[in-house]
Image (cartoon, rainbow, N blue to C red):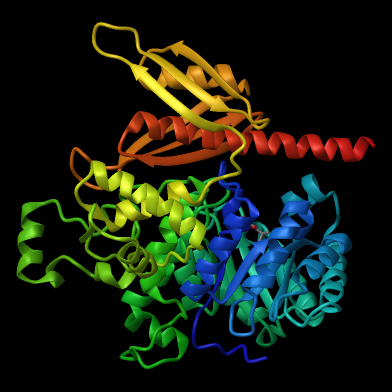
Length: 532
Ligand code: KIV
Ligand code: ZN
């Protein structure tokens, strides 16, 4: 294997580590849609899940392997603890992929060894070697991670890495599991590994890191300067706790500043060739898709993909940008696929124009889904004269990308005003097909709607986040409501869009309740299987 890479491998773990964000749970169809989008984006490796974790995870890895893991597509990877059953399950799920990788890991820091694994350093070293060899018996491409590497004694880390490479690991990944390191320390760690692991030339050095101190991207860039050639990251930086290193930030830093990074990869500084395989024009679309499907919102001031990332508010900046963009812009909005929010469709636009625009925006809908979306488009066009790309995106997300529809909202009506008690009436079809109607009074119209829905659905939960964002400008704009609710320490999200924000609020709540209800049913089914 050639490990003297002069480009950066992008390993996307949105579907594995990213999905560990509270409330970001995705169903198999949603995972497939994200995987397809990641393939269009041009990532080199998709970590599709943790096959052994549950039958749902197994199915997701298998389906991604089947549909996206083609000869010219990305490598499909499954995570596996350094345990035979995990590794076997990963290998089984990955069978349909043309290019597959098992990523196995075990903790190596003393604190994890003592309190979590209750094993000695020698025992963990032996397990790492044995399990990498076991993974290698299934496939050539094996990645090994010493978990909590950053807090591991460096001499011991070198020994474990040497043993893993000797057993066949082709990538060794250095995780900052707790988001503790700083750029210069992380750079020095990678340099130390290059200098002290005798067989390091037989493996690619990868990095993985969490953003607890907001340093993940900076740490990775320093790692690149010191020899790391694979970056493990997620779209919008989603993931456990403060998230993972953000793919879009890494890729755009390497793109915008490629002349600075070129020499570290052995290229002439002036080379304009891309340092990654990513099609940067797909970044914005992929970011929106992940945010829509996971329900994890992107903060407005988020680098690269936040709604304010390319907005100039100050008069001095606006003046400069009008005279010459380069005065205040280091990159072009179009380079991440952000087109001007052109007004292109209206109520006289036909199905063909709608279909063509959808295609241009990257939506490949079946005829049935296209029909559903078109009906909704006409409905919105009746209320709103001008339909922008962002409206179309909101319509498709709302109409087509639905969690299983167990409860269906048939009607919502509110009465409110400054001299009346906000009152809501809702009619909901339950999973057995029966329509139930109830009413409630609340502190405001949304509170009244949620109380009325709770009376019908009757699944205890705590609402932990409610937000409304306008998709476009103007009084007739579509409002997008995102909600997150908690049940037994798990978070479920829902998002819906409508020109009426009360309707959007009700639909978002029903979507989150449907996810919660589906999860309750799944765990009930599992218990029945176990006890029968
Ligand atoms: O953060 C971590 O250490 C991980 C490993 C499984 C690579 O996610
Ligand atoms: Zn992680």
